[in-house]
Length: 430
Image (cartoon, rainbow, N blue to C red; front, side, top):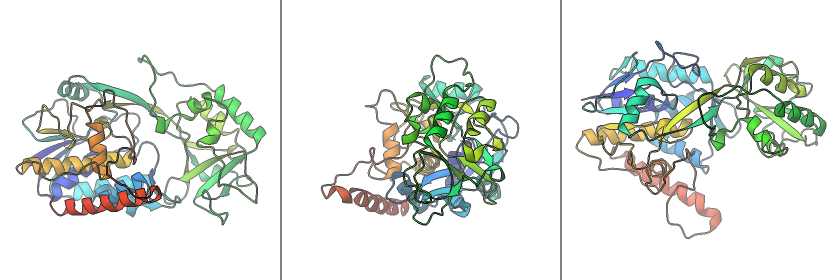
């Protein structure tokens, strides 16, 4: 039996892989080689546009639990991430290009996956389809998705951090250290500022020129990816409690007033991402602002921060907790366009949508993950019809549902052990 998957991003590649390993023939449609959104830079699949970090790999962190659930279910995305991992403290960061190339090769080598380099402009509901078009979806395909969901689209604006050359960092000021690392070494390059230096930086940010955003009535930001200039405008100390927080980053016994952290972006250690500095300042302003930081006074930016509009569904009442359209059961949707937020969450939704699609085509969905697993909790959250205005949300224990009456300090441990046991059992039947 053949299934159509639209989009070779994180969700689409995961969905195609999961279906192919279950014996389905997959037509994977990807338009990048013939029509590419400006936010993308390569023709590789599963390209990471924003950060190269998949966030915490701590099992008792919500996204860490989600990663482990995915590993249990033989996730291609997690296989690639573990293979292309680079040092980033307790976070799982990857070599950006190596990660995409690994996934691209795995997909193209799979005999059950037929990659079709075409733009999809219509959706045939008689063909089993998983839409993984991504949050940058536009044009005729966006119109078709709108038709399926009665035009109930929402949107928010996402921003990308600059990437700089390591050789342009001044190590007379910068130092290596992970937060709370007692050894004064670590996986991050830290660029400290004194109070006066922060004041100069802050004034430069407040007065910096911003790229105009056209054709909208308002700008809606996802709180977890707020442009740093918008954080600064919320108050003088906002950045000090956010991406420039100095806590745990003392050097030579001294705590800086503020710190800008840089995270390795490639395996050969030549490029670094400015952590938490997603932005939509003009390119000239980005350079002016970063050069007020002593360690970055000669910085060379190889990729400037950019702004892009992300589209997602107001999913409750449109899709169910298997990522299946309620009114169009042969069509599923996954990735950020479905209402989840984040790299890992997008891939997880593609994984779960594919497993659900496989069951649907084999006689009906009989096995499912409940909200007492992180993967199931995400699917239940975005399909919860008590929510009238869905807001994209990363994996978190606030949406996790499991009865627990033990000590508060043991709650996450109990959640994690329960969830992993449930996913292990689920994996035996799907």
